[in-house]
Image 1 (cartoon, rainbow, N blue to C red):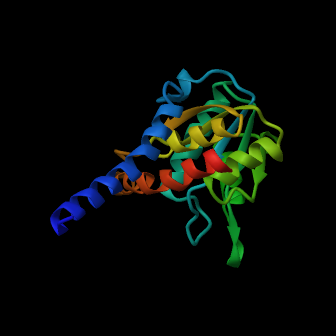
Image 2: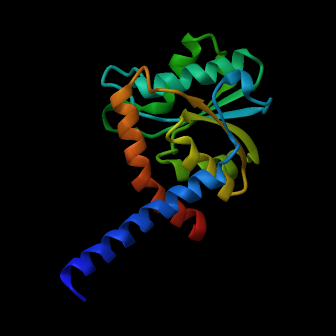
Image 3: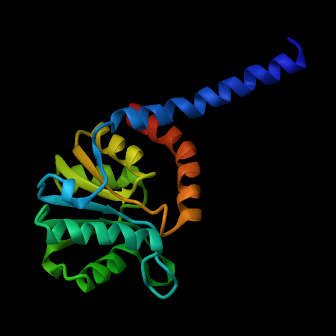
Length: 197
């Protein structure tokens, strides 16, 4: 095989390897991602995915957007409990605690918030929602670029999940573009976990 042909074959294989997991995520979440809290069905629990906390303990812009959507779901009566799923780390880094503070500041009662400090990635959050919190149905809040993978992962572990999107393209265009690019690569291990655990 000539060098040029070998490069063409290798390139095509790489494209397929990246495209198939993305197609899996979008296919598994088709019809399950909503653009507005007002479109959401009433489901007892909403899981809010972590997205980083600043050095001063405030949520990142992406995370604040997710929490605004979650608060709206609560105030509209679409959900009763907000499960805030994120990680913790050295120096007092605590995503769920920061998420709780923000939500309380947005008028959500403290008793309506449940923290999961071991939701270190999307897979862990979905598995723990099922195994630790006994959930089989929930709303999931994240950015639109992240929801296909998250909803697909939740469904792969037996959770009937519906995503409610925060549209970050106007409030954070660079972060949104990076998010879409990152999801292409992130869908590869996600599909492997969904298929093989």
